[in-house]
Structures are given as structure tokens and as C-alpha cells.
Image (tube, rainbow, N blue to C red):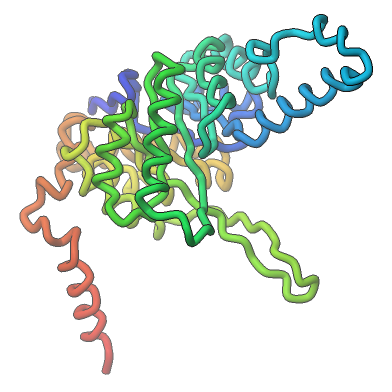
Length: 334
């Protein structure tokens, strides 16, 4: 029997299949079915910085309403610095999931700025989360902000969150950085135990009749695997962190490629949303069959076997790949 077990963020997992942040974690019953189908861990839907600060500001407004007329009334108000504000439903969902399933539950905190909202990292740990994924989703449109300033903001945020928790911390990144390996190394130095490659930025569309910018969510396909696959292969063995590949994982072959590139786990949402949670069992069976047919004894044996450091032609992950791709297409023209 092939050993499908792996480790991620210090957690021993029965296989590399992880449900990434999505609405699937909003119902306890759905997470139970994911566990029954064979999922190894679940990343919860994200709690956004904006949600926390909005509710905190709203509470502050109502608590202080009328205090200009009755100054003595402020003595009856709780200390807001320690007051338990914000979306408590999220913390309660962590507790419910931890009491209902055995697989690790990874909380997800989405934001960019430093501030009081990151105290929710500690509250997530107290609620029972096994690990925390910091989902840094940010598009800077200010031409005065330099790349160095933006990267430093990421590093500072990770360091601040690290101070709040003792549980393992992963950082979910976008691919849009000039010197990604350097940033990855700095994030690990700031306290990240793992890196999740990559965040999918949902691009808005234009309604040319209503003249509005409209949100647009399109599920991923296996074609999107190549970008995170490339950077997983480049970073494997170069940064002292576990790697999770997400975006474009739909088949057992996608899982195999990801692990060969160096991923500890693969995270998926689109495939499960499109095909149902039962798809996990099919992927696990297909993965086991592939490894047996190719005479692998474990996931660990396969991991990183096609990373940049392991392949015969490391330049294939760099400029050489670009030139070969163009040359190969030239040959199709007649």
C-alpha cells in the first residue's frame, strides 16, 4: 500500500489533499462530508480585515452615542481595547468544526494593514484553530508606493501576526512580485512556517450597457496550474518553509505534478465547488493508483523530484523555457 501521508505546518496529514478557503467550510455538515470523502485538512473561508474594523467601529459609535451630553456615562462602558468585538460567528464556527471533525482546521485571516484587527489571529488560536493562513490580498494603485515599501508592509504584517499566535502560520501570496524568492525568504524570517502559492486575484469585468465595473468570479482550470507549479519548483529547497500549491488543481495528475515540484500539500476549491465534495474520494483513489502503477512507495519519495534543484536542466524553469516554447510553436506554422 502506497503511503499517501505528508506533513504541512507541523501537522501530520493522511494525504496531500486540502480544501482551500471557500464557502464549503461555512456548514459543519459539508466539512463532515469532506472528511468522510478523505480530505486531509480544511482551510476555512476568510475573515476579512474590513469585517472586523467595520463592526468594531460600529460598536464604538453606539457605545459613545450621547456621551457628549452625559460625560459621566463613559465610566459605565467596557474597555474597548479588551472588548470582544467583531464577527464572533467566525470564531464560533471554528469551535463547531473542531468539535465535529478530526481533520485539522486552518483559520484564514485576510488583510493588509497592521492594527488592532490582527488580534483576531490570537482569538482564532484560542477558538481551537490548528494553524492560521494569512491571506494577503492587496492591489496597490498608488504610483507613489514603491515595490520595496509594499514588500516591507507584507513582512511587517507577518511579523505582527506572528507575535499574536503560537500555532503555525502560513502566508498566501500573489505571484506579482519582481523578486519573489527574496520576499519569500524575508517572510519566513518574519515568522511564516509555510507559503501558499498563489492567491487568485478575481479581475472585475465591465458592463458596457450599465457603464459599471462588476465583480466576476470564474472557477479555475488545470491550465492555471503552470504558474504555481513553476514557482513551487523554484522555491522548493531554497526557503525553510512548507509549500502549498493552490490554483488549477483538478485531477490526480495535477496533484502528482504539484508534489513532484515540491509541494507538501495541494489546495483546491474550484474542483470541489464544481463537482461536489465526493470528488475528493475519486482524486485520492486516482492518486493512489498512479503511484502504484509508477512504483512509488510514498508521497515523500516523490516530493521535489522535479524541482529546479533536482532536474537535469534547471534553466528550463527560467528564460530557456520561454525561448523553447516560442521555438516549438514556430515549427507549427506552415
